Length: 441
Image (cartoon, rainbow, N blue to C red; front, side, top):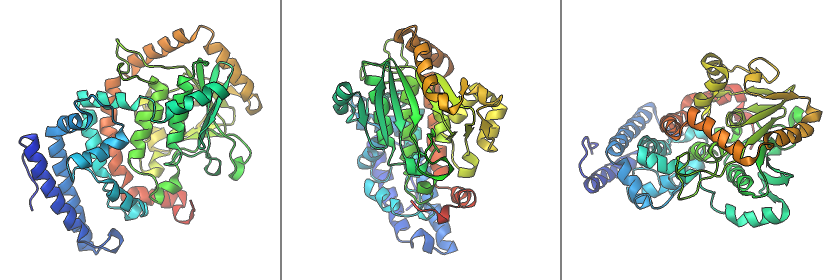
């Protein structure tokens, strides 16, 4: 069955395109599993996927707004990105994979997947590229994560909530968010994201604090055993073994990272709109040991960065084969375009105690002095009051990275990262640079 080449009204196109995607999926399913395909079968499979993806892009070029409005009841409902991609599969069969299809592929190593989640990237890219639906999706991702408010009473009563992979605790006027994955150098993966975002939500919601601190826990492996490190970025072992879903990238950067940068929204207040403000506080990060990949990305949304004198930063995107979140958008503001390109594309390691490092880190301290330094900076940044601090950070943000710039960037990112995530180059990079074949989860 040939792919539809034109578009008409929404209802008719849903029927025509869904029928085509059903036939395409059946043809792909009729081939052997990816590792067992002959060269000819592999070529046929790639052609089926390419044609079906081009059809999705044509369909969404005409109807992304209609899809989004149907799912959100004309934007009366807020739907998070990780739910949106599955709601779309129910609304327009074949447009995106079902949960069952994604679950079936999640049992395979990354190299053995057909990449059905690429279709999620095509959808989210189209939604974000549409100004109306894209702004609404960004808004949805800045609302408190489901389940957060149920833990707020515990935080108010005890000054601490342990979420497993993260915890939030109150010290004086500061909420501390501690990321915890000690066996994997505090790396991020599918098992840590919900806890990290909930901890950030709670830190922002705590009425008894005026500022937030991001810090890594003490780790229990390798040469850093017994020492705090901020974090090692994405868990590359989990990535290689197929345990990191594609939507994780978007859930992370539209959610927890953007909440640190823009604060928590409410349903009646659009983020960064002149008529409505988010609930936000200044953020301090403590770089102890290192901040690699995603943890280096966190530094680019901070108001103040403290770093141990022996700490370092890297964005090893070339060695991983992926786009490092919003670093391509934000890092040039700190270090300039040339250094940013070297960091992302040529593995530049930035020592915190270097000229380049000081463009990202505000202050260097000896590791034993970190606790006292954090307390001192907390006092300094809250001295003029939380209203002034939040207002100044909002003014910087609107000038440097307005919401529509963020939205447009992630429209591109959603599509490009989807293809990177399933690229053969990613597998080769992880095997060559991470010895991924021999590592255990």
